[in-house]
Image (cartoon, rainbow, N blue to C red; front, top):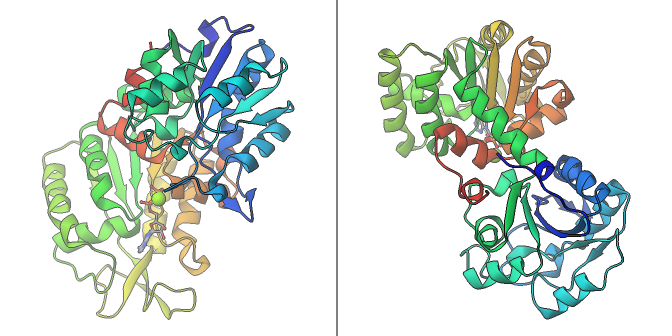
Length: 389
Ligand code: ADP
Ligand code: MG
């Protein structure tokens, strides 16, 4: 994969698509992990004399809501990059082009929220061409958006002579590709969280490539139900039961073990103040819901993680946002931090969990793209990547 390292950028206008879709609080950036993640690319380009223009989306604006302006992001970037960052008066158009042309060397330009333009999500070729007018070189470093064919991720790449990957995007793709094609074995996939329907394709792929799949979080309930257990009031969508049953069947004839929880922590409501108790087993009584995996499950999963050559983790083991149901997720995060093998974390909430439990630095790789990482693992092509050359 061609990266920025292969391109001469001195004095050239370099448009970098970054994923600065960060959480805001009171008009300020509440978590700058995504800005940090793009810094290696931006510092390298800046240091080599590139005239930087940055593009990102932020939230889901319906119109040009000022609350979703890139201004606070530009301000935070200026501090982190240690160089001045100007905010453009829009996304594209003559005024933006004039602003770009008038910038002193060394000043980076942050375009406004690309989703202020209605053509962004529809991959409008007009918008793609207007973005391309701002660029001699296009760099895609937005792994978190690479699974979407939008004007600023896919469209624009077709209209700029040079379109390459940034370091973050390249590292994401290399790490995940190696995990699938040449992992250190045993390869263990830990899958949890809530979006079972979204993740079933990942289970199918890991049944073919992994040595073990460990299921936790709300993901376990369609499987337990398919095995004939009672799931009570646990999160267990009707539409997820068939896929779970099929995955169990596929696991029968596969070399991959599919492990389910053997005990749970249950509660009478999804609430910090709910009644809570440990259940030795997995038959959830009526009126109760499983909100975390139990201690015996945690121990088994931690042993698997310790013995793995590679661990991929997506999806929390429980409702970890509530401290009383965080034990399973915390223990798994800590087991991964101690593990001698390669450890890769994907998924927005899973990444938030390893940061919250203070172990993000001890992982081999924490992916910045939830959906994109899963689609890559499923074996789908990411339109953002296809457009690079
Ligand atoms: P990721 O963002 O890492 O891909 P998901 O979005 O799939 O993960 O799932 C994260 C969510 O799953 C969290 O908000 C967590 O509260 C929820 N969750 C995990 N286990 C349970 C459970 N047993 N019951 C209800 N919600 C759960
Ligand atoms: Mg999530």
